[in-house]
Length: 539
Figure 1 (cartoon, rainbow, N blue to C red):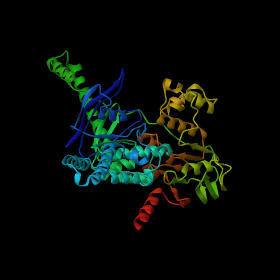
Figure 2 (figure 1 turned 120 degrees about the vertical axis):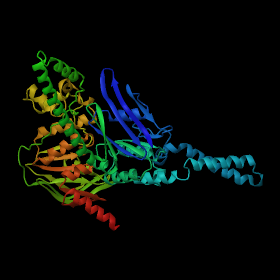
Figure 3 (figure 1 turned 135 degrees about the horizontal axis):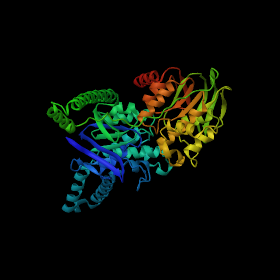
Figure 4 (figure 1 turned 180 degrees about the horizontal axis):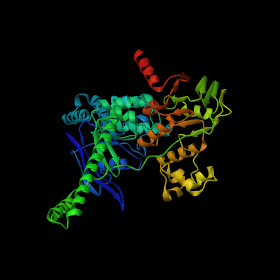
């Protein structure tokens, strides 16, 4: 059964066209992934689906009575004070009815023999309505989702929303969306605030859910695990493909190759016909030449295969080799007020190691890196960076970018001897051209700030890269560019990421949190995943 049909939809803002001819049909039980470059209009497609935004062209047909759940980006959780109440927000009517039934049950006991037919009829009607609305299942659903997303179900009944961090609020918002009664789930980057284990739980939940799912994501492993269809938004239009992300990639390449061949074939035909027309338009074959000319004028011309502007051009080039011992860590203890994050960790980060630092949210990954980089003092022990080591640090919050400076001035501060052309070429490699180089850093989107931070890292010519969630704001194409740059990098990398496809490509070693114990697994991330699966199976 078709739940949703989007036909030739276009969105424009004044004279600026965001996209056109967006067409796809979503059937019941399907799971669609929407991918494309940042700014391509993926979130706007969600707004068109929900009716929040009306298209300038085309139409959207929805199944009558279609219920959708969309993550509240503001995460205000109005009317809720506890985590459990926020998760169950969409069931407020059922909660109120449950409370009314409890009060009626008390009244029924007090009435005894004097109970009236009218009261019993109302009580029975409310019980039947409570069952129809899912009253006997919603408790278990709320508990299961909150537990799966990293909250203790019982503790969440008293834990205040006001005590949550930004990442935790994001997970509560996702929980409320998954818990809500809906036919269609619209998920916008749902894995951004999730650790590896929680992401695995979410993809399992979505595969087993009855709801139809449309997800915007740059997490390729997640798209592979969840999706049955892919909608690729590019060149202000879209095409859809059957299968997950890995199945989409060869299909797209084959489709583009077919179109290029058809285009070349048509060009050869047109050239041949035009040559005939020019030779014969005034000769004895004039009649045939004029006929060919008319047919050519009516011939629908094939367009070249669509293509987005190129992804960023990225290369990390160390200015010197550096020593074989990059960081020496001895009996390191990392603490925050009232809590030990890492206790008694000893290891050596070697030249050309690509270490993935993995663990649940809140384990202390960023604090550990801040200690290594000298931003935080260790509680005890040492972490010494080698004397010939130059480090470049990508911060998760991008907090070291100069917000009140223009992009041009930011690069000029790092390279005062560069001329205008050199500065513009540097910025152009990261997708900033024309007047955009005069924008303040504060005006950039998350993805643009991430690209700017990477641009600054390339100027450091570092032989140690410390990357704390570098893929969070990058689209799929630019994540793949970052992968390629790291594969060509002749240096050392310490990396925090929840992007499993990215870690599988680049990580040659894993440091993972087991409580306050940091364990050194001296093998690639793929082998660590296999070992973790074996550990889970033994439990």
